[in-house]
Image (cartoon, rainbow, N blue to C red; front, side):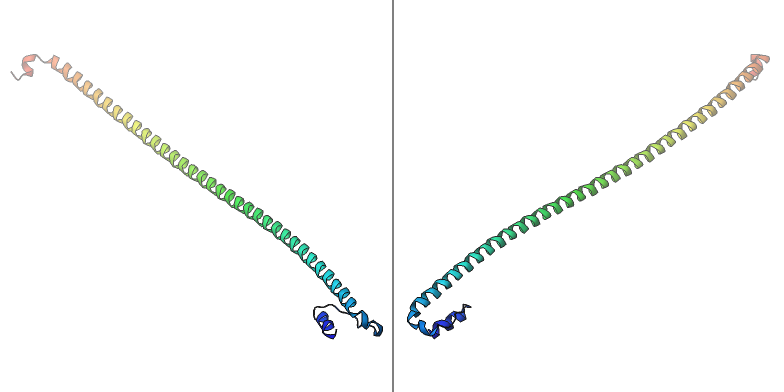
Length: 154
């Protein structure tokens, strides 16, 4: 009995010392104590299983929440990346448009310069043609004053 009391105390089950008149009831008391220990052990096992089940459920819930947050962050990162790409494409399109506008402006300027130069050359040609025509008219009228024989040096 002393050994059983020590064993029970080692497992955290305290048992009051037997009363002096109960020594004959020792096997019955030991069975009652054993039943109590089994009941406590069963309750502890159920509590542990319930705790394990709840901890597992909480862990699963946290895992799902973390997975959801990860998916949300990935989506946000993808959206941010797409927004940056759109901004770069828009910036590139604006730069290309500026280059094309600058090109069109330069081409228009070159055309204006070419047209002005062509007009100036046409005016110069017309002025030279007019002087030549005038000169030829003057030469032609002075040739009429002289007889054809004099013009040939005769």
